[in-house]
Amino acid sequence: MNGNYIVIFLQILGSLALLIYGMKVMSEALQKMAGSQLRHILGAMTTNRFTGLITGMFITCAVQSSSATTVMTVSFVNAGLLTLAQAISVIMGANIGTTLTAWIMSLGYNVDLTMAVFPAFFIGIILIYTKRSRYVGDFLFGIAFLFFSLVLLSNAGKALDLAHNADAISFFSSFDTKSHFTIFIFLLIGTVITCIVQSSAAVMAITIMLCSTGVLPIYLGIALVMGENIGTTATANLAALGANTQARRAAFAHLLFNVFGVVWVMLLFYPFVGMVCRLVGYDPEGIGYTVAQRATILPIVLAAFHTCFNVTNTALLIWFIPQMEKVVCSIIKSKGKGNGDEDEFRLRFIQVGIMKTPELSVLEAQKEVQSFAERMKRMFGMVTELLGERDQNKFVKLFSRIEKYEGISDNMEIEIANYLNKVSDAHLSDDTKAKIRAMLREISEIESIGDSCYNMARTINRKMAGKEDFTEQQYEHIHQMFELTDDALTQMNLMLTTPHERIDFNRSFNIENEINNYRNQLKSQNIKDVNNNLYTYSISTMYMDLIQECEKLGDYVVNVVEARLGAKQQEA
Image (cartoon, rainbow, N blue to C red; front, side, top):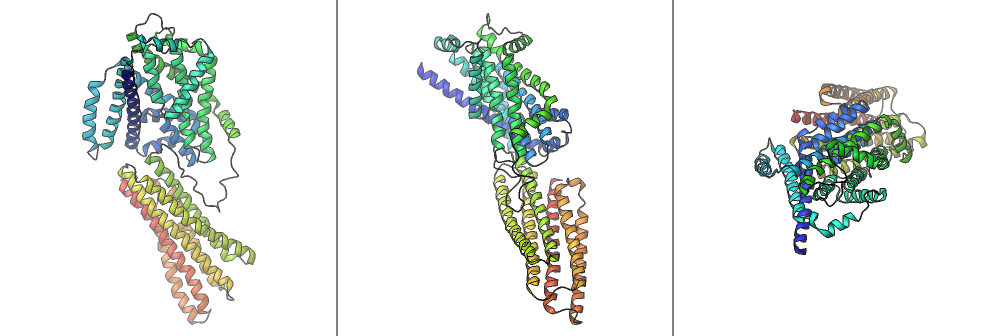
């Protein structure tokens, strides 16, 4: 008999593994099918707390993972695409959306889906090997694994026959279901298990299996479900550990939301559970029900409680989002002021987190590329400032700062490239591959912009160390060229932060033509001025070095624009 229990226990473990894997495959497939639309929806439909709520609910129902939605939301807050208040409303919606999973699982326990599972596997494997429909195949495989695991769990529960196991009945009967302390203990157990397995669906499946056998009282099962609601917040909080302050606040708001819900339900536990049971026509005392009847109705009771809990909690707290925001801000203090020291090397958006899908990873990398480009524009501004600096001490400090930025640009290129290479190891869509190729080219060209800025600073430093200076006319020409170059950099940064359909790519090409024409004009004029002895050949070389370097910098800008344009054409 003990040997049979070991086999059944292993079947349960294997079934849970299939369940978790099925949920993961299904969620990732749905995210790939939706592609960038999820990002656009999340960014566009969070104008107020109610649209944010609906958006979070919709996306979680679509991808069948509240953890995926919450981690996505935390990443968007980290990238500056969502405010903290918007993120809180989305997370509330995600908590409602995730209740659909419990209903799907209750369906899996009540309906024998074996005959539908195997055809789904067969159709799925065919579609996986077709390029156009491979994500649909992944989805079919994932949902087939999900339902197959539920069938296996149901069979394992029946094989255990706990309803006729005196030891199991005696063990669970020893707990006083009328005691809040007992409820609290099972709530902690549900929280800990969910934190360990990182899957609220797995804990829900185990709870449904134990309740449907009749040995676990519904009160204790509901306590486990409440614990699962708290435990599932661990995923987002772990993902936010390396993120910025606002992202950590968003993850903490998720925990605060669920903890508040559990507190008020604990205070009204028995009346609230009684209300839910009456809604589905079940007596919470469980008297007079056969094993078969319990197996049918208890999964529905648990799904109904999960839905009522999250809907009621959201209905209560949606009016207090500003207050929640103040609470999490007071608990998680901001580190330093503003965005931190921009003269120090650090990646602002790319973080080493968990459960990152390629779509989220590419989004973070895109924001980091934008940050990289902004740094290089600031670096060029320092070069312009260096040209007009006459105070020796200030000049040395500014030149040292430019040197530091040059090192930062080298490090940023390497770190972003390494991150993109890791992302490219995943199973990617063609659009995502095109984005990664474009970004790799962009960061290479942006790093070259940093090199050009440093070369100009070295030329100005060489001029400062000498005895000669530029003429007023040379200064005027250099400033005009610097203005054109600054326009090119401004347009490049605008292009990197603007949706493709609103980008005027021709503007960048026109500026580049102006830079080339002005360089050619100044080159010819320089030869005449040297021949006319208006200035020495030595100062003319430094003068033309600055002009030529600006022209090179303009070329690098155009290369970034072309990389961005190439990604757009491949998407189209």
